[in-house]
Length: 378
Ligand SMILES: C[S@@+](CC[C@H](N)C(=O)[O-])C[C@H]1O[C@@H](n2cnc3c(N)ncnc32)[C@H](O)[C@@H]1O
Image (cartoon, rainbow, N blue to C red):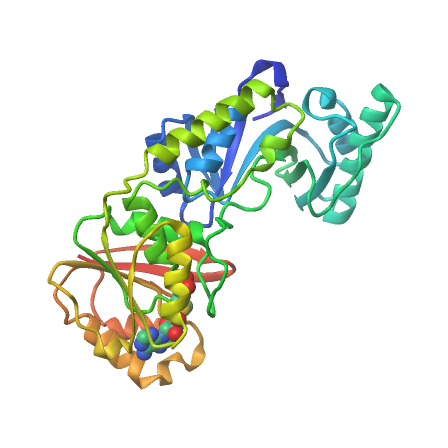
């Protein structure tokens, strides 16, 4: 969208970023939570709303990685276009010289290829605009800014955003300890959503590592909002976030807390061959407010508590995987168990070959930079 948006309008273009392949599920999640103007694009989902709606998304949405508030979007090919476009934003509506800022940039145009230079140019334009108005400049704080600014150069446009989440949303706060290769919590939430499990029957992850899939499943089933464990989000530190907004935020946290199904204990079982996995998964789950059962054990010894479990799991990656006979035997054995559905996030062909059966559904995803396939048997 090309144009400028000012804070008085009280409704802005918002953007929720998503891991590749999860955009459709994020769109559905935003619609379910009654956000407005929701539209999936590559890399995320656009919607509209006020700053409190941006905060509501940080608190409630499980799959988004960041929530961005779009301040402006304008044609940009050169450093001058960038500087002039950023100077035209009414920064005094958004921030003040008492509020620190940081600038991060991605993307490029033919003439602007260094993200470090782009970020510097944008920072200069913001500082010059505020200094011209107030006679003093705001501080830059790279690590903990009150208002983190994000600039994206793409298809001849510069889009300037304020990052409402601050720390990315996968940092929920419950995973203080992890084993190797943990999934991002936001990707785990997407995989749980894909599995269709909402708390009925057993949920089993037999290669649970730090327990992320099981914990996200438990939080979903118990209606624990993913942002409740975070003390605050960046948007609450914006100068434009008013006292009335703060009062709303406090009421909304209370409302979300009261909506947790505290009396409902879904049946969640995790296992892993690594000796520390049980302890770590349980400690992480406790912090998230979820109760899980955990056992140490190899996949080829797995037996299900009852028929009809939903199994959701993420085997190891790596080249030596195919040589791990116990794991390959375990994967083949998984196909013979009496589950309701089985969902495997596979990072290698060796895993898919071991499952040796045609999936009912599949989805290409990215786990960080690694292309992975989520396959389902139902
Ligand atoms: C990619 S990690 C899972 C990460 C997990 N999804 C998380 O978010 O923390 C794979 C896990 O499989 C476990 N594993 C490897 N071989 C196994 C086997 N034969 N039986 C059971 N677990 C195994 C590893 O100990 C490791 O924790």
